[in-house]
Image (cartoon, rainbow, N blue to C red; front, side):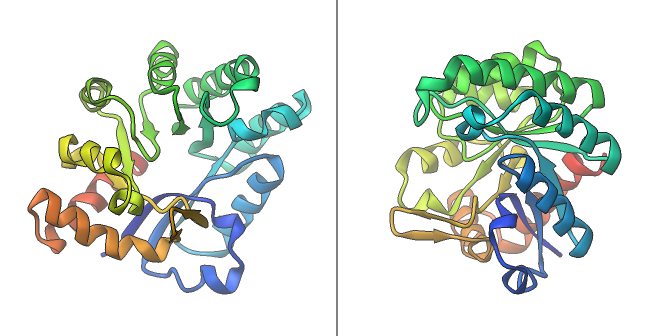
Length: 239
């Protein structure tokens, strides 16, 4: 039974390291056009890699219209099922927020047209991202590393969208509170690796330890929890 990493920047790892993640199904997100090509390549080379393509909100200033069009071409050429990492960010790059909105609209239109999963980045823009996802009639959404309001969490759960839980739960209190209030049938595990956060080096290998923490908080056996997370993943990706 596979572990699940529902949000990982896999293209940043070398192939030797990737080969050690054999027991982990990995949703590989991209940050720009170049990394989208690399993600597709890795998904073709390795088993159990689920590619997402797109442009990260942090990279919006660097793109041109040709790149947006090329993302659309990749969807059709490679039968892509997910856009990510896409979204809005008022926390780290507020200076490009207006442009972020326009690019996000573009991606949501594509997601609606092709019935794609959206893997969402939303720091300090949780409500805005949710409203836009609803506006564009998106049916499959993952709110990555959710630390937003609990009332919005309820709406996300009611819509049968998903949130991801990150190993940072051991040092980030608000993320732990989210898990305590989340429906176990609407969560996925993630690493967001490779990334250093408050002394933690986040990598898919951390998923095993993360499951132990979640099982303690939710009062489930490791076997039952692993089975539920896998079923959640299959419901999103394989339906």
